[in-house]
Length: 141
Image (cartoon, rainbow, N blue to C red; front, side, top):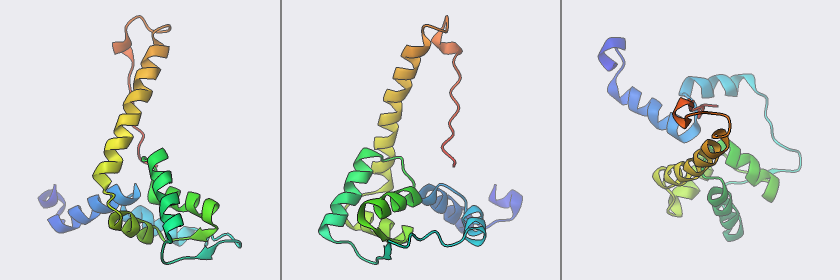
């Protein structure tokens, strides 16, 4: 694909890394930043570091909902702590405390598997064969 579109391989790797981290392409991120106003709550203050209690809150959010994107984690942290961290700061804090994208994705996949099994069980009353069901993955926002 790199040769076909004359794009350096390092650029494609950057795009993929950005997509896995934020759930959107770099171009979509830039467009959203240009078109949205600052969404800071008047009651929220800008934060650059995490206390032990705030780190525990962050870990609880991840444990309960590992499929969340960084901006969604950011919004929940803002609601719970009345502070607003940049997504990049949240990502660095997760890395410092031992979280990786692989761990979060694995946990999300395990939760999705249970949801799929529950869904198939409910569909059995409507479908003659569960194989007739089509699953569409809508992970992109």
